[in-house]
Length: 288
Image (cartoon, rainbow, N blue to C red; front, side, top):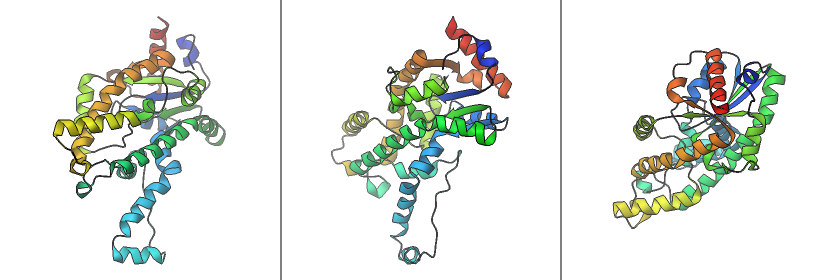
């Protein structure tokens, strides 16, 4: 969904925008702000963690609870109820389920199990992104929202072919929304790595990239047995490697099909009108 002029976007009776970029550049802050101003906020991660991976997450909780005899007996008799309290701002249940590969004594998962859960996430993310047209229509018809913003996870770029307009996800997004890349800086990236170490987020690696980085990390650390890998150590190292691998592909997606705004400019936006002006400026810049 590319516009011929900025005015075409400004004067549109309804607007639908998909924001993408690395975690922490302001996608969710923007979406929360717009939600308070009568924009419908669609969180892809929330949809993944509820509609498509909710049972996996809750079953994992139950699996852990069954290891405790007291809780196991209560579960068998339906005396207690276990659920996931995932929210737009708290994705910990999804992060906990996806986990990190490595030493099980330090909370790690066997690599094969981690890869199985990664594939579950890939399938879920593709489905959640392809749900956008349904939610755009639902937002307008059921709730009366004229404006729609889709808040995607950083792994959007991992589940698409960013150069292929016929890729199912790319085709869905570009036919129904304007793609908007929120571009961060190297300083933002460094801060993200620090933040990730304190509070890990759901991570998805392309299969071949995961295998490559897993082998590379073990080589650097002089580790031969997968069970000797520190999950937290690999998680932070892998996140940084993944972050820098994604950046040029984010840019390519925007160059091919969308627009770019700077995270620093977005940080100054105070309301929906200022956001619309910022997008209009990005449209004008692409035209030039």
